[in-house]
Length: 603
Image (cartoon, one colour):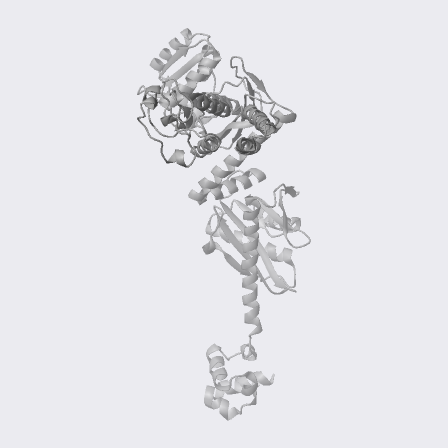
């Protein structure tokens, strides 16, 4: 801090009150860079300047603070609401960023003589009643469609009044003729009947579906008892429509009512929060959203922000909030519950399942747009699983191939940022090993590769993976550490009895590293193993093929490639060359080579 800045900040800290409220940090340009809330403003704000912060981003934030302003409020709840509004208004650089800040659809019952019911995003203070907001247009449309199937309410925009209806200003439209409206515009439906429908619609929109269902069932039974079967059938169709909707919505006992459920999942850069509102055992509202982290925010801070945001957005007045862990948060007349069993625990598990799925889906979407991100994430998983000092951006894998010791070869494949780097692949012919000795062969190629890397000062890998178990790992370690004095992490991919990759080994003595067999990380490592095996086998086949096509002519000293081609072109086979006379051979390749050839064939 400069002296001037230090003095100014100390002056503010000296007078800041020990009350709940919000504080704002400003940079040298007068821009708000951070907004926070506190139960005790003095204690919270002072903590930024009285200690060394472990998080680098927090240290950078503190260095940029040139001024502090604060707003005192009555309660912590007021501070939470104020903080949420200030963040949305100013979008400070170091506050978490809400990735979703759009308006959401509601269903409105208009304050009219014959009320209309429709979807809207605009809230108008004209006495109309609004329900929602709904997390998506699709959800709102499904609800509206169900209401229209149940009740013949008008969709026209006529400004109906008792006078206009008496005077016959309006005529029924197609909706009347297809029996979706009963024609209140011409006085064909009474206001009392229409208002009864609207009353039931309001109950459904409030989430009181079970009460409407019970009412319809009793009405249907009463009509059936009076032998009014056609009218009872119409009520039955409404009852079945509501029961079908309720069956899809109900997740727990209908005794649970007016409860909010929150859960959280996070990764390095984002936090995902799921919100569900329960009314009469049904999920009335459900929504998942994302915060982009800016500082080292705790999960408690992030969930608190999410609770305030969702309750404010969806106008929730629930007196009970189910959460997965304790949060230092107090709301007036609200109880926080961490369920351990029963229906409330099932609700929390459902919320957690949804937030985890949302996190996976977001990750897949991001990786489709940026495939490099997926590989980096998998390499980070390898780094974390093996506790490597840095990201294994450069990985090399080795494998041997021979048949009973003949034509012994080996291969090395290179992966950079999770992708094969084929220009760096290398093939090796085993030179110093006689017979089928995989350990000695592995020793030879590892020594040759990294001795050359040292001599030529080429980059060394961040991780070596052997296609084998503990024995192969020890062989590689003995060369890398004992002979060449290098420090390169070594892992092994071991196979089961059916020759399938079964486990990842690491450390000395090697230990099995836990890994799900259907995970993307397992598939990446298996792909590396399959690639080095393929490369080694292909090289071995090529070499074996050349050995099998060798001719006797190749063993005769003095008969070169050109002479061999000339003879085979003339005689087609070694057998015919052997049967040819000296004079014939002399005419083709000359006297000297003819003598050498016949002597070599006779031997």
